[in-house]
Length: 296
Length: 247
Image 1: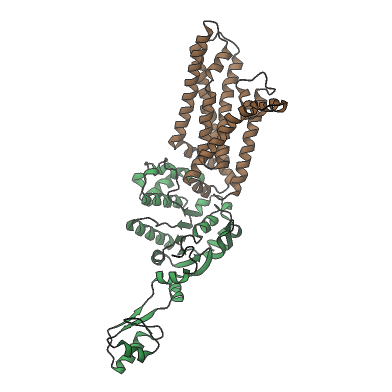
Image 2 (image 1 turned 90 degrees about the vertical axis):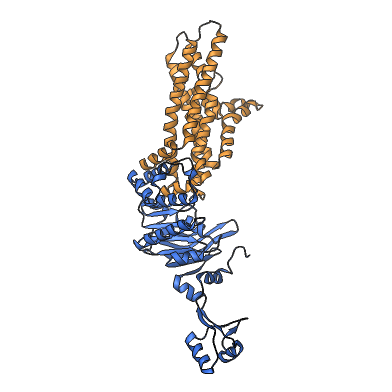
């Protein structure tokens, strides 16, 4: 069953359109990255999926039902939105206890999730004194309380140190490996490249791509072969299909083997013959360059 | 619904400001009552003081306490909007009116218990100071219960404005305006209409349940009911908006 189904979803604030006719599905058992530049409408979309914001039109369904109709929603969906959006005066344990009680979950779950995210020793401390990394863990603990099948994370690695980033990344992959649905937003392609299996890319509130990570790279930007030679001009004349850059040739139409065979026959020496795989970042920039809210 | 109530109770008791505000309310009530009791005793110059007069002197901290209870009511919900914690609350309880109802129930019970106990303590302190010469025990009891009810209502007024305005300073100003300023303002308006209407304005009506004024055509309970109607109208507006607005 499709975990999250977004259909023709739109959100307008006055004359500004934050999300425009967005449709996509999020499937279980994999990490789906929700990618787009800042201001693309990722958070707004997530809030609409979670019933916090009301769509101007369209629907967002969780397992076929609107979020607000779930009886104990935290048993189906766990979400981390803004990790710092908690009352700083409460202890971690009391914060989680209040959340657990609201969905009829036993207090023992609080201890379990505190253990899972590694906050057991900080359980009695006031949340206000938590570092961003600890707040992020607390937010994840709250998301896990109901042992949900579907998890949403909004920019979970923002502002984290490398250790924290690695922890969250491993954690999300683990959740997907257990068969859960993981939907995670980011404005960083490189982050998604290491975490996601599938990508939903948006820009200016519109869908740009809904594809696997591998397809995304392949479709959006081709690789090329970089050729260097002390006799570059002659190589360029020989191959003819290459683009001459100031110290090397870029060839997209031929494979390294074909180029090497040609130059060997002609007796031209080669200094370099490399297939350059475009980075996900480059592919992403290519795709979203037209949809940046504020071009730099 | 029990789940929501349990959760809201945990939220309320686990924040220090809640407990502090309740304590401040109690201290204001008892302290101010004791002060006025000493003053009343001194003014009486040895003449006997009636029990009901002594009770009212003991309850003279009600105006100050009503402000701190209103502030507490505001904070119970505006605090969640300030921190953004409201989103977690709504993720857990997406039926917004159910969340609001949970807050109202928990706040009402906590406020009733604390405020009635505090009112009782204030009257006892007053009696200890003034040693009244006996009188109508029923009227005294009604003043105590009335003070508990009145203060709880003021808190709910605050909660309604907290839910309506959603940010603390605005909600505080609004509820203070309704509790303190508006009743005086209407009283000062010229004309026959204003003279009869001001009895129905918020705390002018609400205070009837503690100290019924002869001039006010509303009795204690009718006056309190009119005050509750003001609060209910505000709460209704808050509920409608809460259901409609983005969190």
